[in-house]
Image (cartoon, rainbow, N blue to C red; front, top):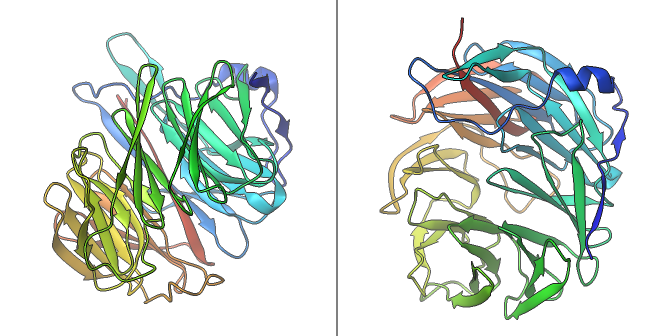
Amino acid sequence: MPVRFPVRTLTALTAALLPVAALAQAPVTPPPAPSAAGATQVTRLVVGDGRTHTLTVLDAETGNSLGGFGTPGKLSGLYAGPGGALAYALHRDDHRVTVLHSGLGRVSHGDHDDLVLGAPHVLATLNTGPKPTHFFTHRDRIVIFNDGNGTSSLFGEATLGLTNDMTVLKAAQPDHGAPALLGDTLLVGMLALNRVDAFDVRGGQLLRSFPGCPGVHGEAVRANTAYFGCQDGVLAVTVAGKTLSSVKLTPPSGAPEGTRVGTVTAHDASARVYGNFGNGLVSWTAAARTLTALPLPAAPLKFVFSDDGKTLVVLTANGQLHRVDAGTARVTASLPVVAAFDAADKGAVRPALAVGGDRAYVTSPSTGEVLVVRLADLGVVRRVKVGGTPAFLALTGVSGTRH
């Protein structure tokens, strides 16, 4: 049976948590509603420093700093939540997750939502389990896989800090797991076990195992299928009601030995799914059985879909930003934006990439900047000086009527 318990909230180092009474006055913004006429989108960037491990919130339009926050340990990942208002900073070595509220919110007035522009603050510091490592979100739910004990912690964020409970499911063993949630089925890719296990979220029982994915790492969901990166291709696991099935996608012909897929990204509006593959990418569709190669001038560090799913933005290790037509898998523009990076250097501080609206945002650790780039022509709109060593980036945004 899955274990359910209230999310455990701890004290952050430099920002006190709101008291329970105050939280009751300020629930987390629900997932974005369809844009109404006259609605305005407000975007804020959360930047994580790769050396001091502090978090800074910036106004994406002006570049102005809105607040800075200490954290309980070394940053290992920074992600935007599904509701648009929150960012999640993982501290793998310190067994904590910082939940940072961007200060953005909405108040419903029936036919429209009013924007709320508040001050950023640390909403909570969570203990989801030992060594929280892999963050997954789809629709309105979040899964964090804890490498230290092989558990997956599942929760929604609409009432986080109020009454939100966490469901914890235990995998076969501690591992570097890759979770994906499809309805009430949790799929967990197990790196050491070379397989994907499927669990019933409601009962906690193991439904089925899918072997044959050596070194499974990285996952993404499109429609009712989850795709997992393997050392020898991609494993596609489909959940159709109570029926679970899998298909193995093979690498492109002539692929160099040892080249693998380890990161996957998907968008429901894009028929093509993408994964990294040596000095380039691979892509495939739901009907494909073989991966299609897209060569690039250097290894991809980050690759992110635009909001509409029509464009894939890729940051490569040579410091270039590339705009890819997601439907045709063709590079349509490239631009040098940051210093070249040695992808094999695991200890170096890497640049980060986020995409929202008609902009891409790239951190430059060597110059202490965040670059704002137009997607239409890859022109640099602004260079925001944040100082330090910016290495993590999450984009938060809320739309509504601004009075």
